[in-house]
Length: 159
View 1 (tube, rainbow, N blue to C red):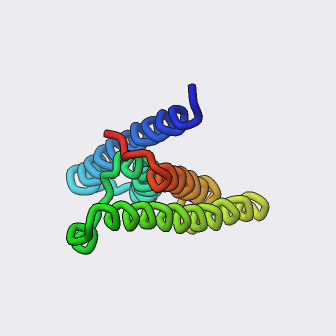
View 2: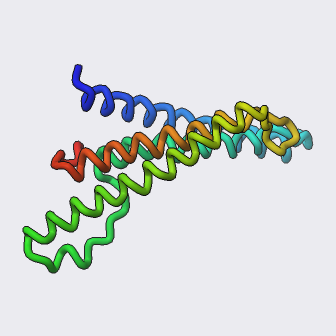
């Protein structure tokens, strides 16, 4: 299996995990509404879990969305340019997106390591280690950066 195929497969796996996070968010909201309004017994933890799952949902879906080229694109300027310039602008955009995601991912990765070293916990009723949330952000951004780079260097977005 090539590195590109492995990267694509990992992005699809992360996307499935993002789907599981979305399912968990829906179930937890239904549970919280039921507990609060039917049984007058609101939870202290479901809101926190939903916030953490939202991070997983966003940043684990990002690489697959980027791989597919399904992100929002405003193409007013490229659409009026000649095809040659369109292609150059598109490649430059992919490479710039790659650089931005890579830098942001590296910052998040370094922060996750710092959080591990310091043993930092979330500020919540039920604290958990912060590093894993920050690591999810780093993983999503770095994987998206690789997809942007692959697109900018010639690969067409996959369906």
